[in-house]
Image (cartoon, one colour):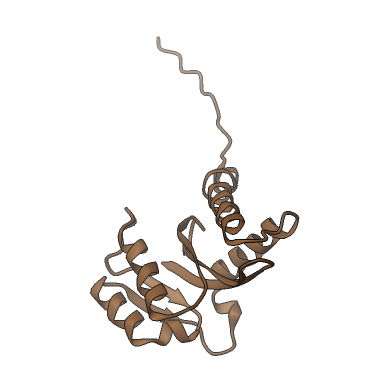
Length: 155
């Protein structure tokens, strides 16, 4: 299952921007992350093209979202069908039905809180750092297992 959503970031110099994530709902690995000023059809198609160009196996994967307008649009439905994705949506007014992405959105906002970006370039740098941190540090720490050394004796 892949979960998707956008979160708004207000920049001092470049105004409101939308940060979009597609994550593996089970591992919370970020598969795609990008920024756009508006949530129009071009942005929707751009996001889905980025997802389609990843190595992630997409055939018959559920793509879960909230009920935002972009996820109810014709271009979204057409493109997900072309990609053989199964769109799924949370019930109205139930952000708790999409906890994976809502948690990640909050973590991103916390990540930028102490060094809040002023412009689009700084936001892109912060997003790249967050994706790296999430996919290479946080997940690996979460998946650490205890290794046990066994001594085998052969007679």
